[in-house]
Length: 241
Image 1 (cartoon, rainbow, N blue to C red):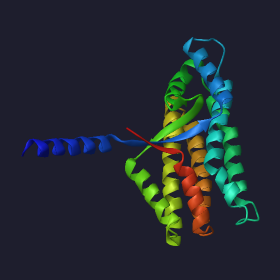
Image 2: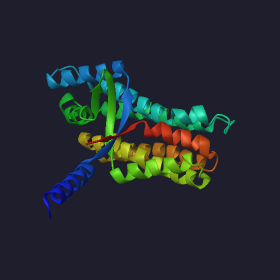
Image 3: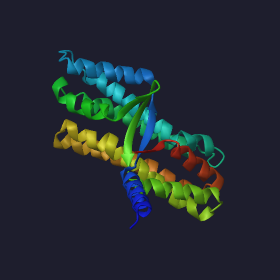
């Protein structure tokens, strides 16, 4: 192989390596005052404060969760009003939010400060600050991200048959977030069997409500509205080296 051919070969090898290392994450905005409350609680825990942080942490985690849920599903309320005169999407989302506000503070209230530290440290690693904007993030598989982008392109081209698949893919992306931001950090607290079973039931119930609603919308929306929702969610997804 001549020198020019060798350089070309090395260039494409480097390109393949960089593409392979590329990953995708979902970035969801967290209100600055909510983050400030979380940061204050974390500081108190790290400094060994004797004052219980359980109730305050339960409250702020509940608000974080609701901000994420509203952000992910709000477009359903905006785009789907003329498809559902009964406000079915709004009812589902309110049910989910009510369950979060009820069970999140309750679940955390059981624990002493030292037991809360692993949870807070786990969640702090999901938070990023960029230009004074706070994001809660979670990684998704590159293949899944590519499937969502491909589905978006098909919808934009007018493929009506792609709607159900597009919403199914979004369900997968959202469920990765549920695992990364709820199921996994829940393990940090090492709940007893009864509480753990209760929380698993709540998580299963709330996710089922949301996912079934998305599935049903797949039979109701036209491709333009579905495309709007997919494009809206794609704005949360970033490719990173």
